[in-house]
Image (cartoon, helix red, strand yellow):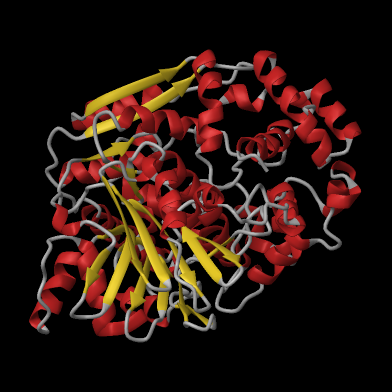
Length: 591
């Protein structure tokens, strides 16, 4: 797990290693254990290293293999690298290190860009072929590892974070109106290739991009699972699906234990993280470290779920750590959490994950986390109403979108409003693509491959890597997801959502954590903004920078300031926090 950066010249000039070094410095929190820059004519790569696999300097990056004519910067972890290494060694390849980076390099030499289809893991990498001058970029199937891009005169830069690109300069920081529409309507989800800035784009998940020396590019989508039923599965019962899910989840959790350092678990006390702990205990893990976090109550809404995380920790004998964050401590560290965001992310979970990661990183370098289970197994409340939908796009937007295009026109200043309903068109087009059998399948596909990538997954990466902590997400094992996509929706929607997963979990964890009301990462003080938090957001939105930017109508802001608790989105988010977070992020990064 690391941070990567680079510059590719698309003309006859040399790449600028100083610009790459500046980006690498900005990536320091992602990789506190080492750094390096390698310049080869028109290409320069940079890397920050977090030592997880092969702790020696033999696995340092950027890594070059002169005999093969290839160099690489790699961020992530390939869980099946030992098996791939053995296969490559049998084919005649020789290795000078014991890590997964060199396996990626050799795999690329043998199989070309198709090597990514063999990888189990999370990754973003860039590989330079010395002889052809070609550079290949790649991103894992769910975009767990980020890859941001910025074009300039005669060159392309890339980095693991958007702020790293800004640090090197010469980036168009104007706001993209279409991305702003996504942020304000699609619950702060800005799908690739867009970011909130016109001058920064991101490589889509499950994509390889080949860049020729003259600047020509070719993208290849290498993974797109079907959300249809398979004829051979027609006779499977609920118990059959339960057993298949549990077996696949066991494999996914086991895969994510590959490391040369201990691996812990972020334990919320919900079904998803609890079953990970239970499966690791089944695997014989001793002295497993688990971590939970809680916040102060607000408006009578409880700020922790310690009762359930305590239950799981006691049941499986983990070395459990409970972190309680007072309100004043949260407010003190909010600016740091905002600075750690590669893009403005509205979920309250961000500050929770940021502060949790700070404490976890004092004990351990790698954790497993339960993100993705709701999207993959149908855990959200908006799926059951779609079961009989005759207009899935309209019905989905009604329950998920923060505001309609017409309503947005009342909130944004006219000069910032996109001239069409960009967010609805994007969602409609994705929902209506082929290879999804039912409206529920269409929504699950959208959430798993679009919303998940640029909300929960991005949040976990940004907040954990701010403290040099690697988070692994077994529910996004691609084979587990392929299995889940083939399951008829009624098995997923049973038991108020995630039915098939809950039935599998019953074979592992106590029923108390399964049958309770669904919980979320609670940070009630950011949902019901008052007191010093209200002062903070009002200061940001009435500052000179905000007034000059003029994103929002003053009448809308006045209504939010007057009664924050009355302006809650369909997904139970604060409209005031949403607009304030965007403005604070822009100010933090000096836009």
